[in-house]
Length: 329
Image 1 (cartoon, rainbow, N blue to C red):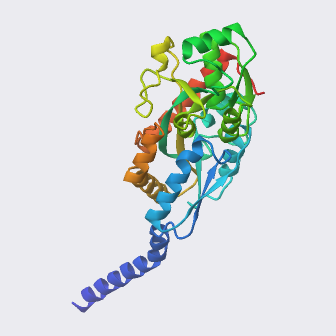
Image 2: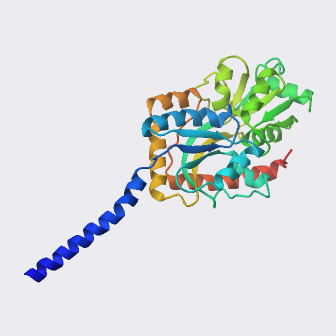
């Protein structure tokens, strides 16, 4: 009996010691975030990524009690910021908010020092936003796409369009539009959609193929005019703007989407926590209203679905780049 009790006591003591030794680790993991989290946004402030990153940052901070600090690192179509984020410590305190541009970049930049699928862990798709054709109404006197095309064909090369940089969706959307409409518009790359949009508003740029997230407030304010949204249907936020299919461009379907990644090696439980907090934030009443106002959807893909989506987008844009002959300017 005593021997039996002794063995039982030994087993209990061993279990208690094991639990005690694991407790600090478990506590450290469950305590995330124990300090502010950095989110690298690879474009200057004021662009489409910011339109979603900043509200998400505020809601995340409200939920967790820890700041989600945005670090804007623009340049080279978003690849500079991606490079910085790929080398960050995989401790859960650096996240990366990339975009569709980063699935185009492998086809446009042959010497990237990071690999989107190997150096990052895809977490969740944050927003999906249709592209919109917007013009400075003082520079482009066209009330609809028909008048716009007539003007472009009559004056090949006279007008220009700004983009967030070579190899971004803004750039490729313009090249695809030119290809499908047999028009020529000069491309002017910027270091982000924000600066390009400001030059569109001021009249230094004539046209943009932009995401609704960054253009919506300026369209509603009358500073720029929307002629068409890409895709097969109108956007609920802008019901009076026709879609591409309605104006004779059924194959013009371009969306700007934004997603969240973590550096490779980030612990699985931290990945799960980031995903949960992000979904909770985007499904809050505050962010639902902002997403709707920007004409955006939250697809709510699983982590595995988002990873598959990214792979599909890389292949899709490689085909578009090859067919359009798009080059770095």
